[in-house]
Image 1 (cartoon, chains in turn cyan, orange, blue, brown):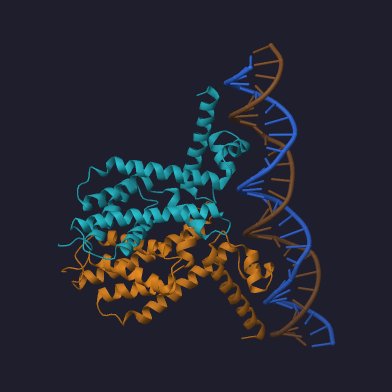
Image 2 (image 1 turned 120 degrees about the horizontal axis):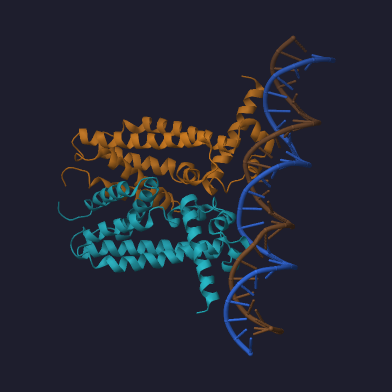
Length: 198
Length: 198
DNA sequence: TTTTATACTGAACGTTCGGTCAATATCTTA
DNA sequence: TAAGATATTGACCGAACGTTCAGTATAAAA
């Protein structure tokens, strides 16, 4: 790799990092390109050299996050044996990785906003579907192992998704300890409606 | 009341209605003053004659909604005897009255946005506190009556709030029947982690 | 009828924002 | 070193937005 290519990559990363930080902190619309460039030290035109548009930049961040999340989950999944443990592990990773994540905040802006591109809309729908699929899998595992009651898996996946989205919003201003506590309590509540025998 | 005063009141109401509808549909930022006035048929200046600002208009809608919600709840509260029934009633009113409500959508924009006035910030904090207080009361009633387990009431109120917020977002595109179903399932899940004996 | 307070109009303003582009700097390659 | 590719700059553009204001219409008061 060239010295130039390396530096270019670094610039790209620096922009992405600053953008992620600002999107997380202020939301999508409230973060301006100028603010991002001010945070990186590089120029506006340079941002548009590396990324097609503001939406493109955001999309890139979503993809990046998606990959990281799955990778981190695969890393730790084997540590949990029961489905119950997995649920708590799931919640913990949510707090540690996703608390104040662009997706939950800015996705909402996109869903409502009328200026979204088809590409973005599709990508977001895809991500929601992936989330639900993940939740379904998690719950189904518990049912298969006999830990959870037989139930409307799709419905429960949706409820779990709702819980997670809501928790993220409610915990936005909380510190890590508080958030962890709230998440654990939420999962506990969620589980004791699922677990077979109490 | 004067003929003029009556018409003025009607105009004010027409603007508020149009604004509410648009805020609900598109969110706060995405709804422009021009769109609101276009929907009412009256002029931009007229809107600013009746309302201090865009924020002021939104604040007015929040207050209005708050009053309506409480009034509706008080109306129906006596229909439910047990705390469990109240929880389901609570969920149902949430769906029927609050699904796609400005608060849950646009409050997020306000919380994140940096252009919010102190007045708005205070008012929103107040509303959240009221919500939590309401939830706490609901849960405490169940505990007092022996229906729910003794538990961290404040924590559970927060979890319930998270659930409700998340449900509202998840159900945004669903029709009423689907939403009701999801909400009922969610409450069922929430309850069976609370109810004493199963 | 005349005066006055209220309700309403819409052009204009200042600002912000995403995006563009011609010019320039920097590094690679021949 | 010269030529070419790549990376970076920042002034600039047009559109959109919330807000204002001088002026007009209308109903109430005198």
